[in-house]
Length: 314
Image (tube, rainbow, N blue to C red; front, side):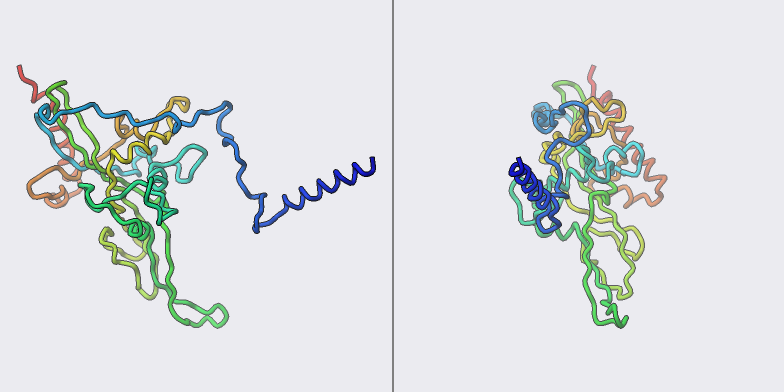
């Protein structure tokens, strides 16, 4: 009996020693390998069975008319909050930006296979090199290197800031609207999606900052600056969107993916900032007043609404 007691005591001591390991191979701070405490039932992963619903086939001969427009989706509008939140991964919930970051897989810049490509133009013909994408999602600036003991400036040091998904504040989308004479209906399809990132340029006494990014607006210290990440071919993005559930404010038990939200339900608010034109210019290029720009956007929207009935033949 005494031997059995010593044996159990030894096993307990070894187990306790391993469990008390610190950061050098610790097991105490490791996540538990089980489903998160989110549901009271066994939840089937939406990614196990969801694939994008294919578009209806369309022949070029059936397209009587098509029009290209560009929209901007401002995530600060309340109706678009479903695309922005949660800002941090919460169980199975992710934001649209986090879904895109995970698809691009920026934690592994050297990895190229199985990741979502980003293109340099909205025709999506020239992929952006992986190393360039990594530099786009970060910014660097030079600040004085001060000796902590003497307080003297001993040189300069370069500081890198890595951008986060929650800094994506808007998206630009390019879509086409076309009239199908086979069904006599006006249809639409998103072609590209462009995330717009916003950051605040730090105040630096040396005034040395990374301003070589062509996709940045004019950078001013302490002021928000927008940066274009690149263009994503929407059909390539849809498989990732279809596997990510969205928080449904009406009924959490009703499955809804980002693909459902953007592609089919179109539950977002947007503003047209450009239409196809011979000068390839945006509305802001010929209308300076923001109020008149919105009125011009509404005019284009109303033309699209009445187009379907105008094309009917009797």
